[in-house]
Length: 278
Ligand SMILES: NC(=O)c1ccc[n+]([C@@H]2O[C@H](COP(=O)([O-])OP(=O)(O)OC[C@H]3O[C@@H](n4cnc5c(N)ncnc54)[C@H](OP(=O)(O)O)[C@@H]3O)[C@@H](O)[C@H]2O)c1
Image: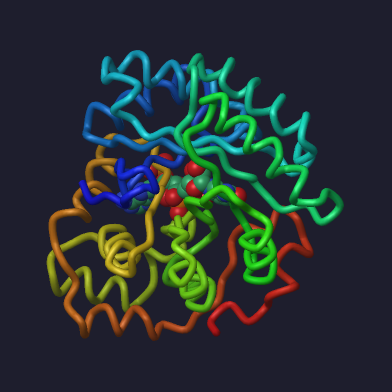
């Protein structure tokens, strides 16, 4: 496994399991399978309505809780201090855990001052209910404002990132400020797997399109959380850890130039920074 060094020197796996849409007993079984295959990082959210299943999957895997990096997220409606704390505590109860490793603001909310959210985050960190905090779906202007306001280190900005949404400028801003970029929908929910360049490289090097798409992100220093409900595809995605793309292959993917955002749950969020390739 490849890791990212966290502010306290501990390690976060650069590959995690996305769990959107993995619910109930099947969802729990998927999480358990992933952990048995070697995944040590699981991504969930209050709004996925699967935290019970994720907690159950972790417990039934028999791998100790402290060996797994667990992320959950607080909905944008709950960003006022007491709501933020209440949402995190409800997530812990649903997960059946004393703490999460990372708690993210799921989407920004311009109507709630970010200082309110940060106050809640500080309390949760002080109480040991989350080890770290981060954000999701923050554009460059919003991230810059947050970095100015926050005394806590921001571990990650989790955003849609794949070969058809190569948000180079946002990645640069994260790197300059010591924030890890985590790619959600790293396969573009499957759309990237049909890309001609990705398929051509995969064929030439005897790898699958998913492995090539994920490896490109990893070599750019981006963490990835592909979702799969299939043990075979979970294993395939793990296989992106044991090969390298060369410079020419990296550059070919870098210059694909397609702009296809697949997630836009809160229209207006991304309009403040439309130039995603810059
Ligand atoms: N922060 C946010 O706002 C946000 C938004 C969206 C997603 N996320 C997180 O990011 C995770 C991943 O994103 P996502 O679920 O939207 O999309 P994704 O991971 O890009 O794609 C998932 C789709 O690809 C398929 N797949 C997985 N591995 C494959 C492989 N090796 N070959 C072929 N198909 C494969 C899966 O099908 P099978 O299940 O059948 O394998 C599923 O249909 C989510 O689950 C969630 O945890 C966060």
